[in-house]
Image (tube, rainbow, N blue to C red):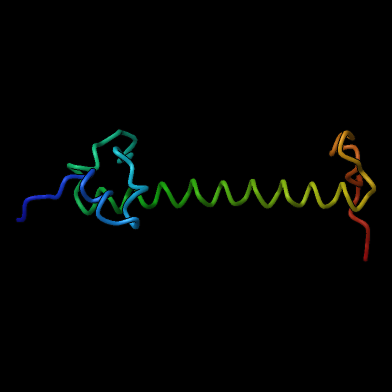
Length: 91
């Protein structure tokens, strides 16, 4: 087993690691990344991926709402939901 590099040194050494968090969530509990095993990182990746996907879903839903309201002639101060048709129109 090798001696781990410090997290701060790793962040400074490469921009690829600059966004590494201090702590990760493993089995619902916070764990310092400095003491995380490879399995811990794998579980944290699954959690991060779920959060990323949820953020993407929100982004696309908001983008679709914006586009739909604009297509239905909404202006900036209008209520967005007021310009969403009740039923989807056949195109």
